[in-house]
Length: 301
Image (cartoon, rainbow, N blue to C red):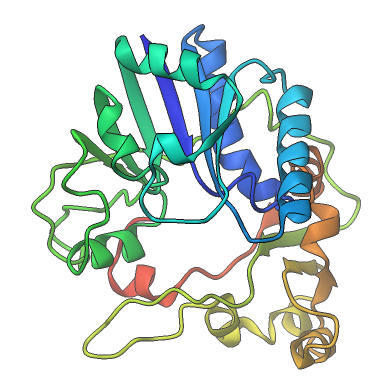
């Protein structure tokens, strides 16, 4: 039995060590369980071949560092398309012939965030949809095809999905709930910092959208953090750090700094999984603000 971990967001974001760490921890766990696991990465071409090659080299390097150099297949689309046709993709890592041989045998696909699309998707024997963002996934599944027609099982990190007080859009699917995975060998405890420090890593702006009571609220961290803007001034014994993707010339830099927030560049402190792990471990705890829709809908994430 081959377990394929379908991912479409790690290789293309070469500066995102935290993003890479999500599928990485799944793979490390599968490998530790001595399962025949293959990281199947979908890489849609950006139109810049030089940048694409650099991103692919970075992806391969990180896999090698973590002992997964022989456990991946990257499918490169020269021209990005929502339709994933194996015949129009180049294979790196595992050869196309070996991939087809694995697909002909017993196999299961763990499809993270609907990364793998038809017609390639339909070649897997068992297909499991693994939701990593319940509010947006549940909403858009009521509007468009998001893989709900092509999978045998549906898993979500929305731990309150299906509960009486959960206000997620109604779903006819039977969702199984799971905690976000953490590899306790990859994430190691560290000595507490000398000064109490609270950190978080993320994107300050967000283009995603869902409809709530007839409106499309801003789902960004910028809006979510608005009510906590004065927190550093009120808790002066703690250091509050935001490793958010904010351009240096963005007025938000000055606004946050003036309010006592210490800004870090996420593409420096968390550029690789190792740097991400060290930065997370350097904090006393995380302080963050989640999307308002997850509060309103009580998703449990």
